[in-house]
Length: 340
Ligand SMILES: [Zn+2]
Ligand SMILES: [Zn+2]
Image (cartoon, rainbow, N blue to C red; front, side, top):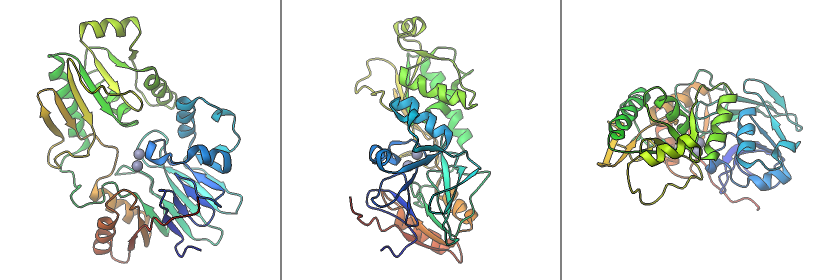
């Protein structure tokens, strides 16, 4: 028996009470909540599919169906819960999902347990957020939980430096931009109207962008690589190519410039890192930084915090919360082993 109400297991699955896990599978837990579709949150998904009831936002469900187009659409254990509305689970707990600003469909998970304890998992989140869940016990994502992860520029400045770099480099050939899912749609949105060349993408990425469009995200005009417009742009080396999951960013680029969009490894004072004349990194990120993470924790009202220590920064974040937020007690997750 666990002595914590909320924790993170060795597999990365986040448990809320004794029946529900988020973004992972654990034996004996009948419910799985899926916060969003990024790979590091999709652990054991196929196993969960066969053994648990899965709850997620309609947008996340649509993205999964677009990506996997398998049997998902027809499964009755893949259950949509609209963000902002609630749903009672079979054990009497009450689930609600709120947007987390990280990508289409991403959510914060709030669960009121049958005994009335309000617990929650932040999922990956951006800051600021309009609507922050109110809970007693919280598992918080620690991606930027280190005090070294304070960004001294705004996301608007990061976007401006992306546009500037892309426009400048287009004068020398094609530009190849790699970003995470969710961020890549933001890149498209930011570039639209600012570049005069076609923006090319794989069929997979185009399918994903269509889901964004269908859910009211105003992005447009991607050209398929093998369309007539795509082929002629490739020949003339006058295009922007977007890469995301599964697109295989070639190891050697014969021509053109690469731009990677990620806040990781970029100087915290400037959003742009020039690696060479033909390689750049822009700190476009859909993750709260260190200060944003602390502000989020405070805004939830939670007094008991478990920092997700699956990858890193769980310790540093717990120390920071304990010293900066009076009356709040934080510990890193145990990442203890559960029966497979
Ligand atoms: Zn994510
Ligand atoms: Zn993540």
